[in-house]
Length: 141
Image 1 (tube, rainbow, N blue to C red):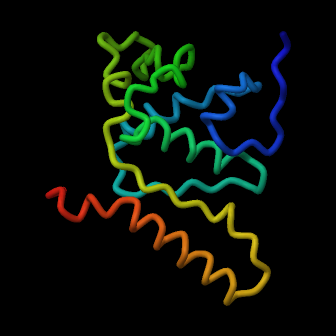
Image 2: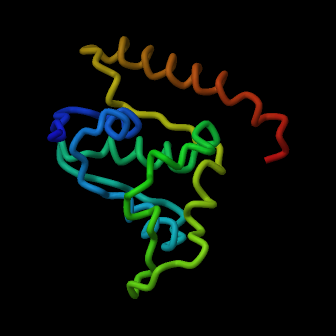
């Protein structure tokens, strides 16, 4: 069966589970992880996959997706190779998947047309995230 091209899909999990056509960008995870940057700014033009890439990162690192390696099977990160092309033994990236608390926030869902309504929406999203991750306050991390 031919894969469907999911124009406008922004959720990595849905793209993979629906078997939509997907250009594998998971090697970005390895490249980004190995640079050890303090800050990463990802800029691209509109409709260039920023939100989908951030969703991919969330699904890869998030504790909420621990044990969900099937989302990455058959993709570059699951068969990780070093920068010189050698296969990484005991793929450390398979062990890294699902091991971090990830707080994901996207402006993609903010569609308000006025400043005050947009500000309210942003504050509501931040409040929801704070409540979702309040366990971190007492975690010692």
